[in-house]
Structure formats: structure tokens, C-alpha cells
Length: 301
Ligand code: SF4
Ligand code: SF4
Image 1 (spheres, rainbow, N blue to C red):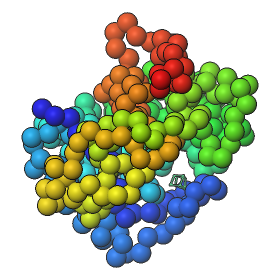
Image 2 (tube, rainbow, N blue to C red):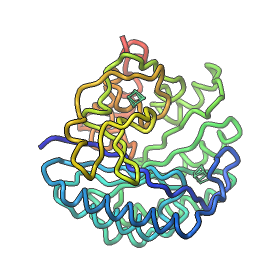
Image 3 (tube, helix red, strand yellow):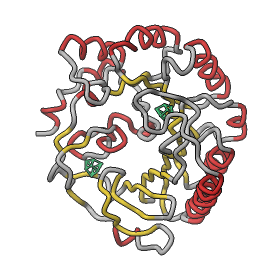
Image 4 (cartoon, rainbow, N blue to C red):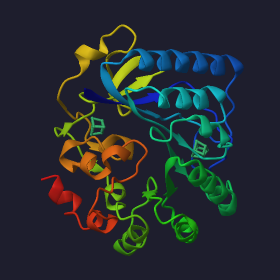
């Protein structure tokens, strides 16, 4: 069965946190927008449920925080039980309760979590992580690599279960010295993939072929970063829109984009954990070996 990776983003743009660098911090959505977001999501869940000729992997990438809304929790639970859904994951700040995940299929449901120092205590965040461990839910944990957050990230790494992958995102606008890069790479062996944007113009990308981005109204685009639609989910035109394509942007600097950039071969690195950002550790392979891959520039040659 053909694999299709789907990133979904509806109109929801509100968040309970107040991260100083984020345009959605403490934003409140009006009731009519929340109703529209819910209706759009339920329509999308219906499409996923009915599209059984593809092996679908879904990542919800809301602008704000989705798991404080019942309809995102319900979507994760419901889709995790669909036989043709290989993965359903959501990006979250992990502030919301986790008990609802007991109803999800732990083989399929997963979380991409981010720890935001200053918005939540490390102890409270780690308590949520332990809840996920108890539930047997797959999750990655991430930190944005601001220099002032390094000590927190080190302490978090020490406290997390050894098997939990901690990723570090390069902070937007920050240029890392080689010493800083070494420090962050000690925490995340794959930090080198995040620290510099990837030149992408004219390079082949899975986005638009076996990965798509979907908006609430069903507009299908290659990825979140190229706005031109290639079809719509609900009139079936997405099928004809899928084809091998080269990137038309000069660079790709977001993990949810460049994991699909073919020359990087990151589908081999992440395997089944591609969407929730957990490197796939096959038997005999370790994170250390991933760290010892050729430099990114060589892989792009
Ligand atoms: S948790 Fe995420 S969406 Fe919310 S304010 Fe922070 S960065 Fe923005
Ligand atoms: S390289 Fe990035 S911007 Fe270009 S098509 Fe792929 S995901 Fe989109």
C-alpha cells in the first residue's frame, strides 16, 4: 500500500502558554473560530477514515496548542484505531492532562512534545513524561536551543528516561559558534540537521509526492512552506496532484519540511518515528552511529 504522510493544520491559533518569541502566545480564539476548527478537523478525520487505499501517517501541527481541545484528543484516539493509519501524532506543549491517551492505540498514537522553560517547571513537565511512560505512549521531547536554556536542557536530558529522544531546534535568528554547536550536539546527536538551513532549490523532495500539507478547508499543498495548492482533499484532486517534484524554495529550515528533502535521507534515520521526530533505532544501530553519519553537506552532494 502506498504511504502518504499528511501534515494537518486547521485555523486554531490559540495557546495557553506565553513564550516570548511566539505570535500565538496567550492568543484567544473566538468561539466561531473554535467551532470552525472543530468542524474542519472532524471532516478531516472522516476523510482519513474513508481513505483506506493508502497507508496514512498523520501529524497535527496546529499554530497554537491543540490538546487543550477535546476534538484533537478525540481525533488522535479515533485515528489510532484505524487499520490503515500507521501513525497519528500531534505537536504539543504537554500542558494538558494525558489520561485520555489510555483509550488510544499505543502502537499508533504518538506525541511531539516541546519543553518551554519559563512556562512550566521542569518537574511538572517531567511528571507528564512519566505519565506517558506509564501509558506506553511514544513521544519525543524538544527544546529550542536558546543559549539561556542550555542548563535546563542538560538537566532535562539527565532526568528523562534514557530511551526518550531529546531533540534541539536551532533558535531562529541565532548563529551558533562551533563551540555552541558542540554543546548542543552533545544533547542531540542530530542537532547538525537543525543548526543551518538546508539549501533546497532544485533538489528533489518527497513533499508533493508522498507527503502533503492540508489546511482546514481541505486545501492541499506540498508542504507548509510552499503556498501554491496542488489540489483539494475533499474533491479528490489531491490524487492527481501527487508527483515527483523538486523544491522551489531556496532553503528549508524547519524539521517538518526538511525531513522530506530526498538528498538528506532522513526517512532512513527516523524510519517509523519520522512524524513524531524519534530516530528509528533498528537492531544493531545506535544514536552514536547516527551521530557518526557523514556531514550534512556531504549527504547533499
Ligand atoms: S507553547 Fe508553542 S504555540 Fe504556545 S506560546 Fe509557546 S511556542 Fe507558541
Ligand atoms: S524542501 Fe522544504 S520547502 Fe522544499 S518542498 Fe521540501 S518541505 Fe517544502
